[in-house]
Length: 263
Image (cartoon, rainbow, N blue to C red; front, side, top):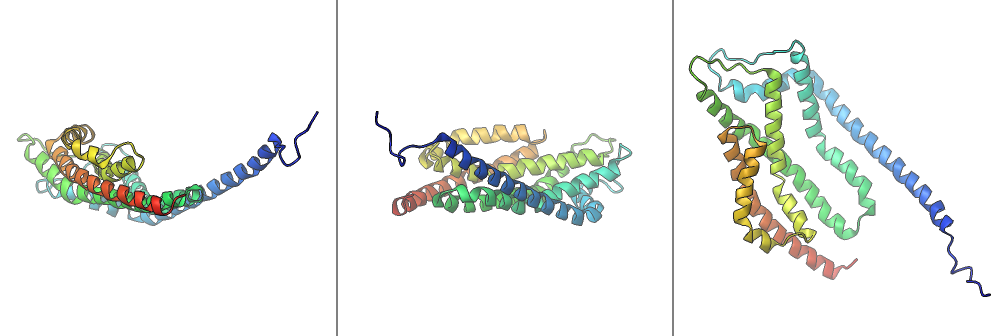
């Protein structure tokens, strides 16, 4: 009976023995990245906590500017004056820390990516952060004043608009999240094109369906007033066009780079 040479024999136990230390190393690295991310978030939160009331006053400015003279926010719950600024400080810290949190996630996954994937991931991550910030800024400076101006004007005569501070904060955070996430549309389109799920030409041909879907989505994720719905749908339609252009450009560049520098 013949036996395989020692060089051809492969013991499955050897693979398990090598895989265990690698898994432990990955878990240790993951723990370190999570600790760094949480530490950075907590540091920003501690810096913002003393300014929680001022942050809330700034956030309430778009509504207060539209209320009649003497109009103000109220606190229905006893603990609301404490928890509302605290909640706002946490979400503000989360937004400020977003680049740091994404960097920690990127530092963990980057060693396992191909050079082509790294080349595409960096601009996509940077663009996603910038677009989310742009969506929140658009909501604060343009959408909220328009929405509150509309809502205060249609209030029935004799009805005093006195909003609870917690309800107002939740309303504004929903607006921020809706606009910040919706502004990610070009990034989502580019990723879909790069993965081969759709082509730039298909995106262009589906423009009509996309516009209808955008208006339906705007009606679902925004508060039930027509102003915020229109002010979300309009920039999303423009961002859809940006996504078509960006996907066409990046897909062409990715193919060129892959052909000249194959993995």
